[in-house]
Amino acid sequence: MAKLKKEVIVIRKNSGRGGCFNISSSNDVFKERYLIVKVYDDYITFIIPSIDYNGKSYSVCRDKTQGHLTISSDKNIEGHYVIDEEYSNEDEITINLI
Image 1 (cartoon, one colour):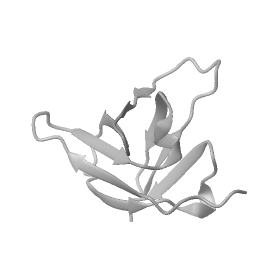
Image 2: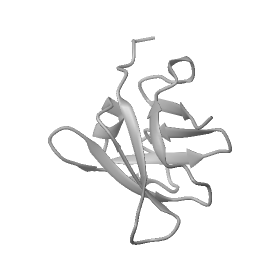
Image 3: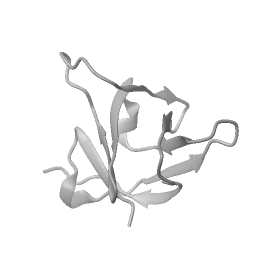
Image 4: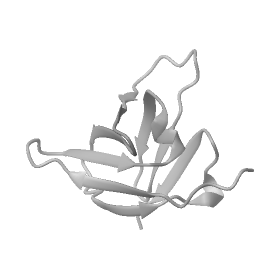
């Protein structure tokens, strides 16, 4: 498995919309046009969808250095997180919330 860069994923609460969070990262996964985001009790996964995927995905906006997306969640997931290399690869990254 290729070594993943140690970029930080930053999640901030969207002040204008309750339950929405803005997510930013310079990780290569965030260079994709769309991502599947799954929020669990102790972790979040960001998955690059396959070509034939037909389900919920989030559009990623890019600036010169980072990708950004907004999701909604019942949980307070705000914070700065490092990618869990043990459970991540080139197509899916995982961050631990605990």
